[in-house]
Length: 226
Image 1: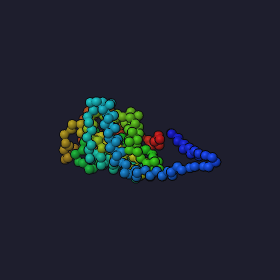
Image 2 (image 1 turned 120 degrees about the horizontal axis):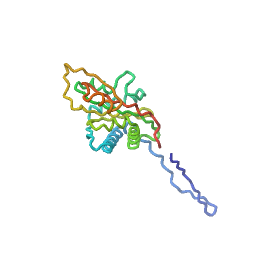
Image 3 (image 1 turned 45 degrees about the vertical axis):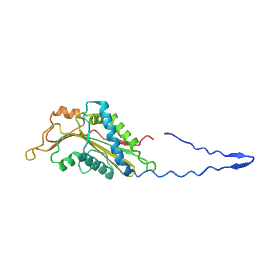
Image 4 (image 1 turned 45 degrees about the horizontal axis):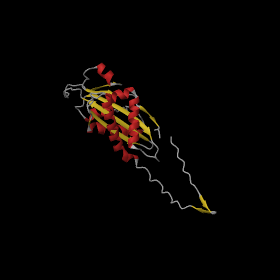
């Protein structure tokens, strides 16, 4: 933490004090954190794209998927509203169940990384700084790193939300694994959960119709380094 001290000097000439320094205007309040969430989402997406290429230059580029963006935002908003950090909501809902309820054709591999970061209301939320801290936190966790770097993912969506003192983020990754569209009359839509792409692929080379969900442990809430 940097500490700054302001020193006022008093100039005395022939027994008379002269102090003509202009009054310092108060700093404007920081922007409303809610208005910073879109910029935070975009910055996280950019940083993750760059990290994937560093880890594996052969990884597929991630296309921003409006369905995944909507569900990621819904997940983060739910965590902010109910003040929890977990892959399953208090009512049991998950991003996989939300997507499968919305999209009858969704199948393949779905990855989810979530995290939360406290902020100081008087300072506000710097999208660049917070995005870097979220991504750094995921990279320090092997399970989260495997999830975000899995080279077969080709779609993503980032959602961010804020409550009184905490920012919540969700990033979703997806690939249909090259599977054909499911037969809605015969396919059994199931969800299998794994904690890394490696374990998911080892369990099944071709995930069953439905969603195979990768859910590393949540990144704990912590106070950002200032």
